[in-house]
Length: 390
Image (cartoon, rainbow, N blue to C red; front, side, top):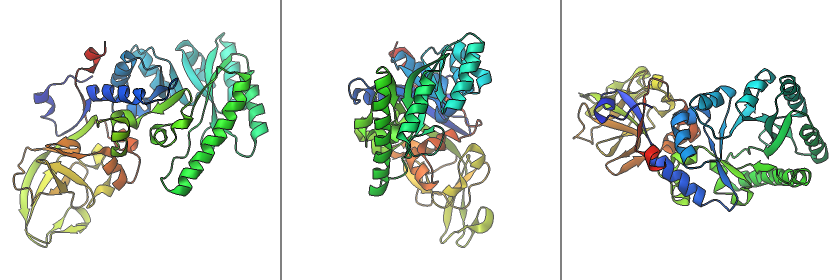
């Protein structure tokens, strides 16, 4: 964790602030709204979508979070190396060569079909180990997993074969739905996928009634709470990056991305701004050159479309975003000065911009906005959540 020293981090050209107190409150507020018997599986893959997996895992572990999920065995090992003891599910397929390491670290692995599961079974037996696994079914997303659509009997038979393999202890079954829109047709498709999963769970519970099931993520929890089962996989929701969920779950945005005004100056009417002359001033224009660019992880699709907050007011991005800087029109913000802190997303003097607003312009998901911020953006951790939840 980078220590919080306001004078230190505000000397940086650009930085991210992660408020651990807000993340802790968000977790508790989400947990309080889940149906009885359902718990949070906190998704920490991609370094908790760029926020810092280890620091967030420490907060959640102290709050009693029962399960974490990551994408790769390397991400799981990093948590163990930092003394995180909570059970960790690796969402992506694990190479059989890593079976011994997964078992010795008490990781739970994803089983995507019989062939892959058999290879893991053989590798685990050869080293005298036993490993817990969750069967992944493909209910419509067409990614990893065992296809269940239009083959109910065959898929259940294959899953039973997986459950009988030596060296594997199947403890769960899960899916990830397509979650691709809010229109009526999209919602119905989503429900069809969840119903397919529900039928699969019902049949598998006849074989093992203690099997844990999970299918909902941050984007589907509010719409389909009746499919909550034993876990809901929460990622973007605990950091409060989407305004739509703020009131539903009483979460607040815990992430801020900041930079600094490095220079201000006036441009005459008719002056081209940045590469390719994609913006030409239509009046005497005062610009602010801000110290963050595409090499820091901002997409160029924000050019001439996005905003940043200066002195509590939104300033439009004009011209193409550059490698190391972005140009804003601050003509209508006369109080803007060199050295001012600029808020890319977060709150400033009552004005707030969510990560979602940038994702909407990209277009993309809220998680990828923070996950693709590059390492030259230092992360600073605010609050005292670690002490408060001891």
